[in-house]
Image: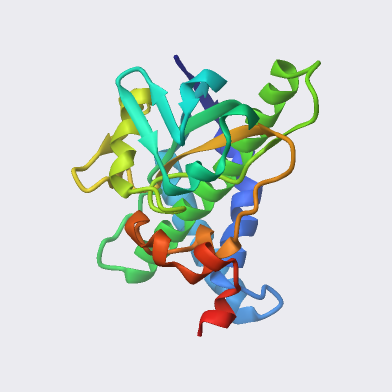
Length: 240
């Protein structure tokens, strides 16, 4: 069973602006960058009614994970990396789908309005995901109040760690993504585009040995067996 979590735009506003400035690499000590930021703030003000931050979250019991697979009802979520997680370490799994809607922009002819609206949307997604993780950690504290020390893994999801993008359809089915206004295309793309989905394991014992390169890998799961980083544990620089 999934539950709805909502955040107000005001909760995300200030951190989203900080993220926006970082993403644009603005130096607000420079007059030109200050002028550009004023233009960007105007784009946000014009499109702010389209920002609706909503998420669906489902907690999965440990017994739903077996032999590197997560089974929820009729859906089975797979990922190459899951084979490195032993069943007895898994204490729970949080699956989520999140959308921030769209930052509308008034003129499709103004490329800067389009660009700023897109960056605002991405900034709100990043910040809203951080807010959701904090909410999940609070739930962990309550749920495992008397348990041994546990930790939340890095995020897994369609398109990275060797998980096929097509798995998005399974997340959508498990989480009833339509209840937050999301639609998944045949390709696995979520609409609205400023949306994301993924999962976190709650594990006991030592942390997973997760190479940071895997987080940004553009490859598919079929290539993991041939990956120098994944297979031999060497750095990306060593593979060049």
